Length: 227
Image: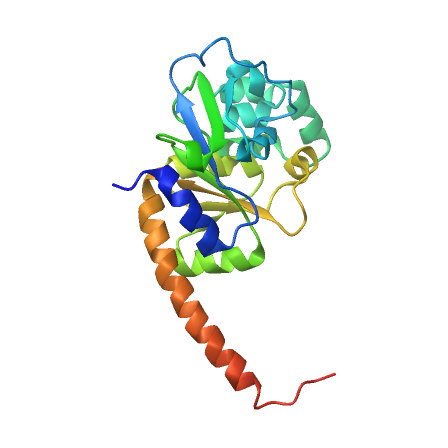
């Protein structure tokens, strides 16, 4: 089987990505000691953008500043996440209700470490994360119509992908501020194991789109342009 790292380049080309895909790997053993210390971050989603350029071996404590993200990533249980001071602030704002937590996707496993790194350097990731434009979402949805549109919080696309779904998030107010995600971009997570099949489907879709777009471009010439 083609390794996931070898599919980074075709994924970038086929989806016309502006940013490299990120690989996410969940570990059951503590991250190796002795590496560079990772500065504290507001949430786990803040590791996504830097991981386009470097490997980040994170521990449970590195995610602890966001109770919701710790829950979606399987690092804490529901009761602990729901009782966090940051969660209370989100509930009091009306952004999320206490009852909503029961429907938020989360990892069923309890990892002890999470590695974020460029997909091109990953050995055996669990989840692949990409930043999509509306155009690239069009291409992906054409190839994979089963793509799921996830609601807030944005980070629940990670456990959804871990469980086998391709999930797209338009973002959420909290994560967009924390990560600086541009208004014209959204995030998508897909199971790393499905990547070879996704790339094959994308190739067929891109070819079909190019033929259809060529027809539409020629056909448009028959009509007067409205000013």
